[in-house]
Length: 134
Image 1: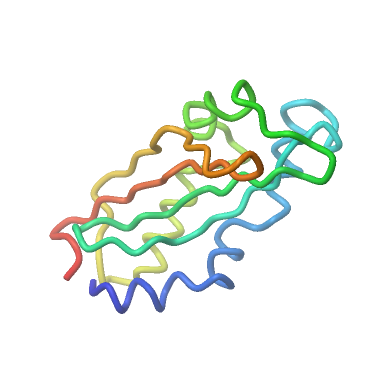
Image 2: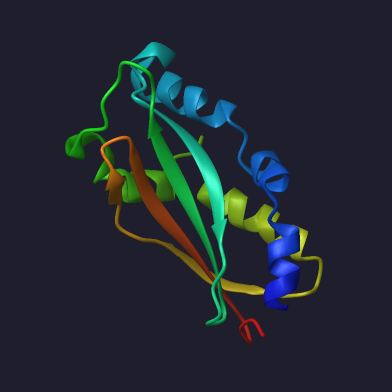
């Protein structure tokens, strides 16, 4: 898989298909029993990487009138890795299908939550490819 191919595959539209905006509401409904308790929206963003990986990020953006607090986001990588609504394993499987033979995912990992700003926290999702990218 080339870097150019990966950029063309992971368009904003395709990322919304892979991880629809509605997932955040489903996640908060499952967690709290009430969507209005959710403090942020979740989206998936692609980042280019030259080192044989596909880098994606879960962007957690605060909802109007809500606040992203450390205690709400810093434990999320562990929660995301096994929560059935977020379904990272299923997401990775869908990304593998999207690659359509141009690459094979060897393994994946979620990184630590990073605070980009008070209104944006990011959880990196790194997909390691067999043979890497060119």
